Image (cartoon, rainbow, N blue to C red):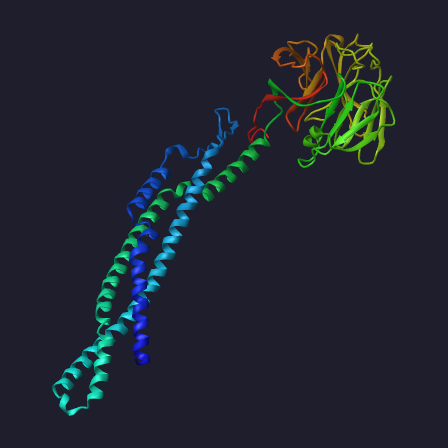
Length: 480
């Protein structure tokens, strides 16, 4: 058999195999069978499910011109919409890629089809010549006649292949039309759910978050409305002690300091995070130059402020330098259980920090043992201003400051609550009734952390946290 005919036979045989594969496999690949179309219908139903919509609200102003910001976060399962949208886009891309592949295959098919048509013409011409030769076979040698007969026998099987190829070409055309229709449907679905596209929603949420942060900057100090909890972080140490974080530290700085007992101790333990504190992975130990009195210490802006044992002297100790940066006597302040809180424990001088700054709460003989609130200079420890509340300190449990207001508790009782508050802004007091759960029956330390918006407490050998709810007034631009 001659090489050209062998080549032609190989080409046509390969095309027949490809056509057969496409007719059997391609419909299932593009999802044209009944099962996959049913799946597609299900996808449409899923994408249109109203339960998966996002709800985003913007800020507004009330009738008094105050800015009100409300954010309703989406449910956790809303992320499933993003997965379905991504699957839809991937399916559309696969269909488009398949369409392009079929287009390339169609071009090749058309080229090969033209080649076969040309061969068909040649075959017809050869057949005519063969007939002519057969009519005049007496004039040709028997050998030539036999060669022509063999060539004709080789070409004759190509005729049914050509007919099948024409049928396959029509099938490919039908496939292309089906893919166009499917692509149009998928594109329509994508456009329909486009308003829920994750990227668009993400950008909207980012914009809302920016506006919310701007609104948060206008928040004035809040008033305590509710205390919830507690959350027990760890159980360690004696019945009395203190633990704290720095409310003035950056968000990445989450160091925890731990000071066990209320006297005869000068060792401060440091942990890099709450998690390390829980696991006991201590990072550093500080040996203070003086023993402390009470449990009412505070860490503020990288320094520890504490009451020196058996004195009314306040010490400022910097953790980074390991040095005492300042010390000052709190004039006339009682100490060594002269004017403690109800539970005792050398709690005469209570140091605390809030959104405004550093404070000292104590009592003096000059004001008959009533609570005095003094604002301190954090560098020099000088008293910048004082308020006489008129409330007897020995009748008070632990207390804490929020936005310049002192909140007094009966934390030594099982049915604990905040029952008295004094505002340094208005120099007025009021009686309140804000209960909280004294889970372990004896609170010896209770301090507010303005960064965490939480109360740190030492409750009978348990280190716990209380969440607080504050009522805020948001200033408008005119009031700022």
